[in-house]
Length: 262
Image 1 (cartoon, rainbow, N blue to C red):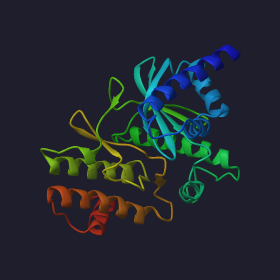
Image 2 (cartoon, rainbow, N blue to C red; image 1 turned 120 degrees about the horizontal axis):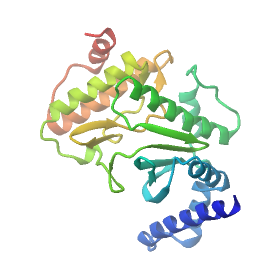
Image 3 (cartoon, helix red, strand yellow; image 1 turned 180 degrees about the horizontal axis):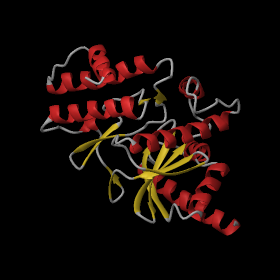
């Protein structure tokens, strides 16, 4: 067990050192290794080890995205490429997490801060599983252990698909209608609302939009679900109106039509 743990730790160190080389002129060693400890503490490394021991992971290669709340690594599993999302424990936005956990009958908000992040990881896994089950186009969830979620990789050769904001669409209205249809499926069939949908968490892959980052998604019985639905629609329609000059009815009207099944 100790040898395997050391091996995982060594892999992480190599990945982080490669990342450090890319930004070595911007980050001091002391600051960089502080970040390393915050993102990959002993508990996180043990969760990675469990995923390797379960056969879910066979390799991890590099960091494809790093933010305040999570780090996403490119990895390999028995069935091919996977994305490994590591939720940061010590820099998590606990108040934001609690806001979306409370009111969701599937979860109870723990008092312990580390357990809140573990609940957040489970929440994204269950949301992805539920959305995929009802035909919403999301990455397929594979497993969750501790603060680590493993899911289908949207992209190829460790290079993630571009975000909606970074792509110039040839048929923007088709993509908009597709996204709205996925919002409808999410609400009417999966009984979920994304809650933070925008051009920043929709990927374009194989000529289709893929919805990502669903940890904050709430059940429709959540007291704020309808207002979150309207906000999702408003952000998406505003993006398409601003960039592609596509005019649509008021987001409130669209939301009502989606809910009523019209």
